[in-house]
Amino acid sequence: MPTLEKGLVILHNRLARDFYEIELVAPLIASSCKPGQFVHVKVGGTMDPLLRRPLSIYDVDKKLGSITLLYKVVGRGTELLTRVGVKENIDIMGPLGRGFSLADNQHVLLVGGGVGIAPLVYLARAAKEKGCQVTVLYGAEKRGELVAFERLRKLEVDLMVATRDGSAGHKGLVADLLHPKFLPPKIDFIYTCGPEPMMALVKKYAEENGIPGEVSLEEHMACGVGACLGCARKLKPDDEYYVKVCKDGPVFRMDEMVL
Amino acid sequence: MQSSFNKAGVKEDVDISVDLGGLKLKNPVVVASGTFGYGLEYEDFLDISAIGAVIVKGTTLEPRSGNPSPRIAETPAGMLNAIGLENPGVDVFLKEYLPRLRDKGVTVIVNIAGNTVEEYARMAAKIEGNEGVAAIELNISCPNVKKGGLQFGTHPDTVKEVVEAVKKETSLPVLPKLSPNVTDVVEIAKAAQAGGADALSMINTLLGMAIDIKKKKPVLANIFGGLSGPAIKPVALRMIYQVYKEVDLPILGGGGIMSSEDAVEFILAGASAVSIGTGNFVNPRLALEVVEGIRNYLQEENIRSVRELTGMAVIK
Ligand SMILES: Cc1cc2nc3c(=O)[nH]c(=O)nc-3n(C[C@H](O)[C@H](O)[C@H](O)COP(=O)(O)OP(=O)(O)OC[C@H]3O[C@@H](n4cnc5c(N)ncnc54)[C@H](O)[C@@H]3O)c2cc1C
Ligand SMILES: Cc1cc2nc3c(=O)[nH]c(=O)nc-3n(C[C@H](O)[C@H](O)[C@H](O)COP(=O)(O)O)c2cc1C
Ligand code: FES
Image (cartoon, rainbow over the protein chains, first blue to last red):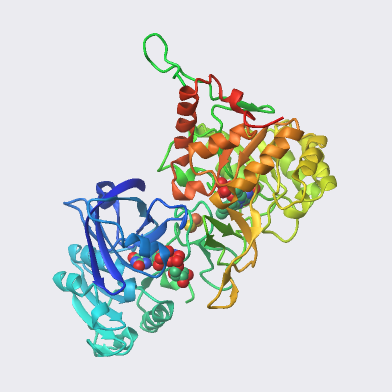
């Protein structure tokens, strides 16, 4: 059940130039969250920036009652977040939104680009626990920005990486790895999160191969709970109604949308 | 100043109930239209029946799908919105949402917006007789729809006409919601009074915009949007002060309230009750925290009833 919690920061690391991970003790959220859900974070007590910032749940330690977030500094809110110290509290709302659907014992493919890897790491953990065979394709600008690599390696997933500059793995787009020669023969389900052009390629591959899948979308948010109608999006151009990414999503089925 | 302790040393309870032209509220804090959905969205975070009232999302005669995205943008100490009155229409509201809110004991104020005077009247007629509605707020000030909305709220004659038409169809208290996008808000308030308004709600958002300098385009798909949040608080206070001085109607006041101290400022400026909008997004429990804060303030200041506070700062 969503709640408001003061998360006690127990770890806050800079992983690369603009990438950080932050672990918070937030037992109510940790015990009830599902992969693909997000938390709505109040960064600092200021009136400017005013609104909360949505961040995906990157990893969960159910025993410790903690959640970890992975974020990239892109503006003032995320910049303010970098200044929060260990032992301080941050005000978080969550878990929010509709997460990924996940069945037991499936062969699943996860494709993440940049900070879009965040919800897929928690998903990979949950999938492993459900006896799934998990393959992850992970793309970044360069080697140093493959910030989730270690965590994924420890989860013992089949991991392939791509970097734009070729400093690690395949040189080029992560979507280039969507090829039978790199992939297991049987895939039951595909999940993707990252830049929309990347997700569009993943969706295309899924459709061409008749594989169902889910996509995690972003939209600017105010309330995060479906009340303000600010995060509206048309899933298909001629849909009459707008979905609310915060409440109806952020995860949507590939077959209900156009990217 | 002394706190009002009784002999047993227990803080004496203060009276925080209010009456705005027949709209009786158990406490003077309501949540503003469009910022709290139908209340149900926030149930996990607080007891929505403990809020003075929930003003539901702006309701129209027909369903509306709203404006394209982006619909919101953050601005210094505030935000712009151009939702475009997305809502399922008054019939769906009455059938699907109202019974649920009534069962939960929520005090409901319905916010209505029409394209024509007749539409306002027809909605009021549909609402009449439905158990569980405490009042009607007339959105004559929405800056985000092409027809209706703001155009009604900026001309005294149409304000009077809309209020009159609605009053004919309803026995409920009617609160026109005034737009700050006018030169003389007192003139509009007087027109609302002449039309038979029971109380006034103020203020709606200020028309504004933001530009993305990389894309060299307006940020909002609608180009313009309504500015809300702490940035508009001084404007809201000033307008409430002016209207309180000149017009003898209770005021539901809001605009940028983020704390009980802000709320007390509004009451001192002339509001009988306050509304919280954008603040809900930042702190979903704000409405009830403000109720507690007002109660504490009254105790500390030795004031028995919140009603005594209204307009106390207004210099006659
Ligand atoms: C459901 C969801 C989950 C997310 N998960 C993560 C995550 O795990 N890690 C992470 O680093 N980021 C995530 N984001 C994006 C993150 O919310 C934004 O990067 C953040 O709000 C930017 O705040 P800021 O103040 O630093 O930037 P601003 O100063 O507000 O903006 C800087 C730039 O970021 C863009 N931006 C701002 N907010 C958003 C948004 N909500 N979505 C997309 N772009 C935005 C702006 O358009 C602008 O170009 C997620 C977004 C959503 C909607
Ligand atoms: C996202 C959003 C949607 C709104 N929708 C409505 C609406 O449907 N009808 C209405 O009368 N006012 C609407 N408003 C205005 C608020 O009810 C309120 O009057 C205004 O935001 C000022 O108060 P605040 O600064 O506390 O938010 C909306 C405001 C926001 C931020
Ligand atoms: S952010 Fe308010 S409805 Fe989604």
